[in-house]
Length: 475
Ligand SMILES: Nc1nc2c(ncn2[C@@H]2O[C@H](COP(=O)(O)OP(=O)(O)O)[C@@H](O)[C@H]2O)c(=O)[nH]1
Ligand SMILES: [Mg+2]
Image (cartoon, rainbow, N blue to C red):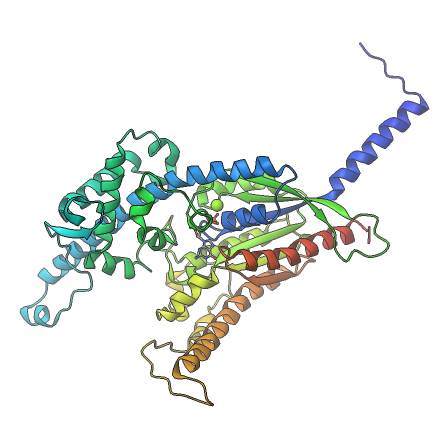
């Protein structure tokens, strides 16, 4: 039973305690990463963690080493699952095309050119290897394909639901087994029909970005003494579930003379981005100093993992629009990260057109919640869609070699395209800004490039801190 009686001293102590706690809370600045799946949130999170380690560096290093060891299983699982996807899609699309052909007249058949190559299964495909008997492995491609497909079906039929460390880590197979699996995946990756379906995947189905990087070294990744490198760790696709935090100290730079605050703790928050993860976000929406909305630029020519009839950039714009519609971020600065610039350039170079994403047919995006209603973007997209013909013959101009001229021309194309996409996000933010009193900023990033992210984050953290101090009336 407690009657409460507080003397002046006790009250002062409580007040002082509360003030101290409040001050500590004021010093913590939260930066929240949001965006659709595979936009690059976790890669940015990893980079920020590596650039700004927590105070206990040894513990942090041990954590990273542990994460890399786990990433090995994810890399292996992705290699098996995504090779199985390539095989299955190649077979299905070729089969569907053959059925269409069967319905054609003889004349139509004669003029018909297959889009999807017929899968072929050489019985003795050679993979040179100094350690193998006779200096090479002889692979039966049918057996290789069946092994990979069956393994993928048995071990992780639903890749998004499975824990790679349990699925792969619990496979008690011999070292030899993994070596042969590596040779199988490597041999399949060399097949023309696999390369053909891989190069035509955009607009049809989604694979992890950078999977070609890992397929190119599949044998190394499967070998018993494989160590995950820093680059591998940044490039592997690990689906995030739940909400993950990282805290680090930050000393304010260029703080106004009247500010007594210089030391802060930054908390960066990463969340799962796929649709089934988004209901967990709301718990992280409290007192955010900056919202980083991450979008993948190359998604303009990709389909959404969760819904293959939807363009992945529309999903991102819908999500951006929904987030700004909510009441949570009315006083929060929004920084848009147009990420994966490197992959975006590859897409533009390969000839994927922006107007295919922002076309004039509203049936293709019936529920779009961004844009101006009549999709006038399509005309603009065509205008900015300067034809990038990588077969174009460039000539020397002003002492520049044809290659240098081509490079400059390509840079111009990319800049125009980037300006166009930026404009769409800004227009969306501006429309929502009628209710908000914060404007949006935009950064073009490549999350796998440490120097790029370090520069951008210096600005982001500084702006977030200053903004919060201003809102709190401290400066
Ligand atoms: N090449 C390249 N890959 C990136 C970039 N950003 C992210 N990725 C890759 O894209 C995949 C998905 O990234 P992730 O950070 O997991 O996306 P999240 O779902 O938003 O957390 C991973 O394989 C990353 O390595 C980038 O700027 N360039
Ligand atoms: Mg993630």
